[in-house]
Image 1 (cartoon, rainbow, N blue to C red):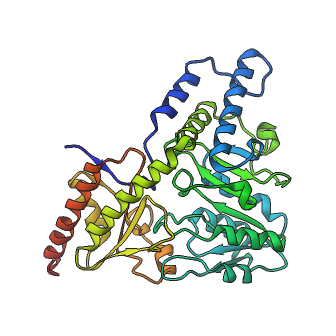
Image 2 (cartoon, helix red, strand yellow; image 1 turned 90 degrees about the vertical axis):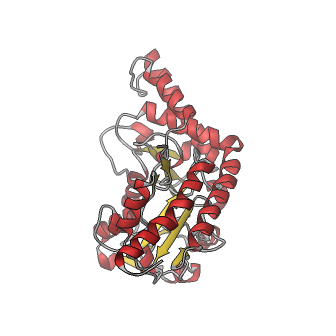
Image 3 (cartoon, one colour; image 1 turned 120 degrees about the vertical axis):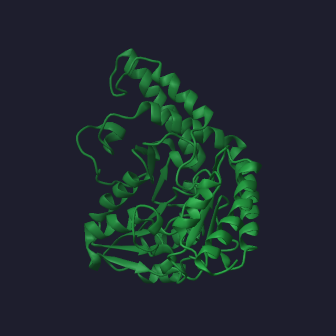
Length: 377
């Protein structure tokens, strides 16, 4: 039976172009990009080419790209680096746990102001700005939400933060490769991205740091990444990351986003035709690849297992079906059922049969579970 992978918001398959770039590097002698021998300089050329490729996709200057081990490290670097500027940060309630936990661990509960959202998961920019204090070091605002797909008004927030002289960090892990980003034009100070979300390899990401902004490094030891991130560069991973970005920058992003939106809408329509199933997130301001559903009377574990038996890989929008037993803080902040939800997300290699399989299996799985629980269909 063919498997149908619809969990691209978690991670996507490696693109062939990224794999080819990695194999090319792995086929060469291993070398430190910081050395001046021929092998080292060849490795340096690979890293700098990838830096240009990532920058081109994200609308940044190459020197603004700092390679990291992923978005989590990039977020930690942004929080750590900005914290020396003040004792307070503003964090919307729907931010990824990496943002919330890094800020709270470093500054304590008194040093973090949580800003609420409306029922679609959108942050009111005026409320975000009202939370700024004289000692605010950093304001966080994700580009697009990882559970419900809602897109925030980053442009307005960036302009307002810039006018107030407060740094803004944008978590774009879900948005990069799915929507057009222009780091330079928006005047964002810090932006974190992940390679594996957009079809690059795992274990690599980047923090974009606005030109002229100086941050203390999170990792100390060497002078790699112009002394902004110590440690030997992951040259094969960086090469794959760059190749994936180039594939998207050459018109691929628009094509993939259009196809993803069509697939997502097919899933949304099929799912919400089932009684008791609703769609979460903003109806217009949303990422193209992600659908989050609320399902009455059915626990998410049962739905996930039923779909898996039907060959469909999905994820619960609630954290209780994965690593944690706690309800989703994102859905709680939206004041919807945080215990019973399902997330379906498409990617660069999703095809029509994947979508059709999920659309057919979901009503059957929900109906069977409701019948077992005595709720009917």
